[in-house]
Image (cartoon, rainbow, N blue to C red; front, side):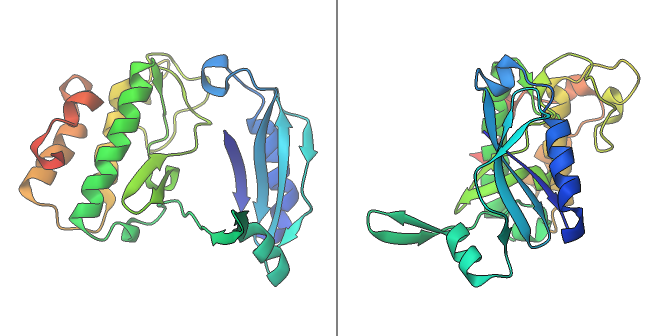
Length: 230
C-alpha cells in the first residue's frame, strides 16, 4: 500500500508532512494488514520526498532525498526504472478531470472496472467511502482502479469522522451508517460528472446506481450484469 499527501504550493511542504503523519494514526488489520510501516510521499509544488510511516503515525523515516522536480536529473531519477537493461518511463495520472474520459467506450471500461473493484471490496465486508474521479487511476489503457483508501472501513457502520460533502443524503445524517449502497451511488455520480453524451443504456445505469432510495440501488455484482456493460 502507498499513501501520498499533495499540496500545490511548495511552501506547504511541511504541512503535507504533518497531514501525512496525522492521517496515518488509525490503522486496522482489515485495511492495512499486519505491516509496521507504509510507503508514503509528501509533495508540494516542485518538492517531493519519499518516506515510510510507522503504524500509528507520528513517526516517519525518510529513505530518499528531497527531489526538486524543476531539476532535470531529479525528474530522470523519479521517472526512469532500470528493467532488464532497458529504461522504462511510466506516468500515472488520477482521473481528477472528467475530460480524460473522452469516449463512451472509455467510460464503459471505467465503470466496469470500478464496479469490479467494489464487488470484491463489498464481498469482504468493506466500503471505500470516497468514490470520486480524483480517487481513481488509469493503470493501463482502459484499465482503471480505485485508489485513496484512507477513508475506507467496515460496511454498515457509522464512520468515526464527519460526513464527506459528496456523500448521498442518506448517510450524511448524524449516526447514519455508511453502506455499500453509498459507494454505488458514488459510481452513478461519477457517470453524471463526465462531459459525454450518454446513450439510453448508460443513462438507465446511471439512474439505477444513483437512485435516491438506497434500497433501489443494485449491488456491484448486479450492476455488472446490465446490458450497457456487456
